[in-house]
Length: 244
Ligand code: UDP
Image (cartoon, rainbow, N blue to C red):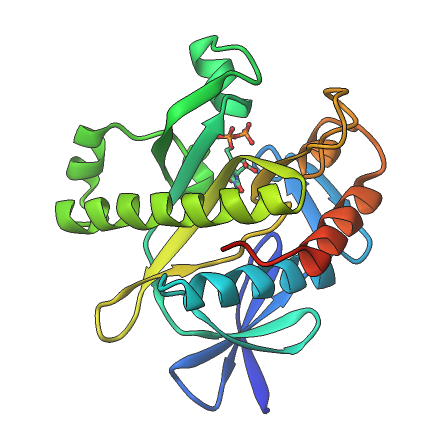
C-alpha cells in the first residue's frame, strides 16, 4: 500500500491520500482533547485501541446492512476508508441522560431516555459545535430534509445494533456521536470512528458512578485510569459472544 500526501490532521486522526482517489488512510493518534481542545493530553495506545474497536464495529454494522466508509485495517492504528464528503453534522443518539443534555435541560444524570433521542450539532469548532434546531438545520442547508431523515434512520439503526452488542459485553451504551459522509455516487455512509472517544460507555459490572465510566469522560473529568478503561472496552469487544 503506498501512502503519500497528508490531507488533513484533526484532533484524533490524520488523513492521508493514497494512489487511488477513492481511498484514504486514517491514522488514529494517541492525542486526546476535550472541551473543544481546551484540554489536551495523551492516552497511551488510544490510536491502536480506537482503530481496533472501530474496525470491529464498522465490520459488524456493514454485515448488518448499514453502509460505512470502512474498507480494511492494514495496520493496528490505520484504516483504509472510502473518500467521502463529510456532512458537517455531529449526530448524537442518547439512551440515558448525560453530558450536555443534563447541563442544558436539568434532566438528572442516568435518567433513561425512551424512545432514544437523536440530536444534530453543527460540526464547527469556531462556533463550538452548537446544537441545532430543525429550523436551523433547514436554514444552514448542510443536508436536504431527505438526507436528515436518512441520517436519523441510520443513527437509530446503529443505536439498536450497538446497544445490543455492548450489552453482550456487559457495557451500557449511554450515548454516542456519529458522523456521516456522501460517496461519489451520492450514497450516505457512516464515517469517522466509533470508540470510547465518541461513546459514553458504562460498565454493567460496576455500580459506582465513577468506577463504571469506561470512556473519554475519565479524561474529561480527570477520573484517572483512562488507559485501563480503554483497554477494558477493547478486551470486552474482542472477546464477547456475537449478538443474534
Ligand atoms: N461527542 C463526541 N465529540 C464531540 C461531542 C460529543 O464524540 O465533539 C460524544 C460524547 O463523547 C458523547 C456524546 O457525543 O458520547 C454526547 O456528548 P454531549 O453532547 O453530552 O457533550 P459533552 O458532554 O461531551 O460536552
